[in-house]
Amino acid sequence: MEQVAVFCGNCDCGCPTLYVDEAAPADQRVVLTDDFGQRVRMSAEQFRSLVEEAKAGRLDHV
Image 1 (cartoon, one colour):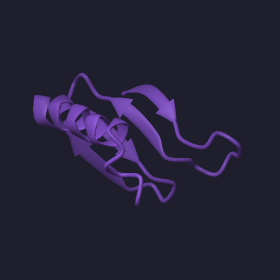
Image 2 (cartoon, helix red, strand yellow):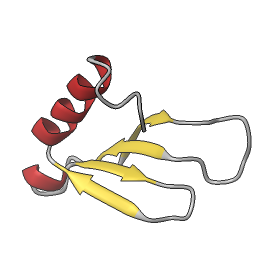
Image 3 (cartoon, rainbow, N blue to C red):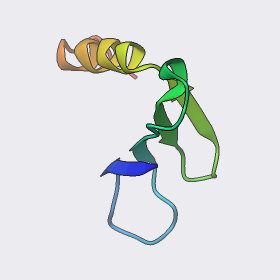
Image 4 (cartoon, helix red, strand yellow):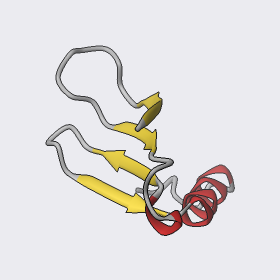
């Protein structure tokens, strides 16, 4: 898996991290891990939709 981004980076505690797994099926290539070691897999299109929602401010209340 190729690491794309780390969401925290201020510690060495297993921060949430975004990866791309080119070897995975297309619907599971984007991987988001949390700081507890759990993983969420999604397609690039699903991730793109999530990013668009965030950019539009629709996730600001979370």
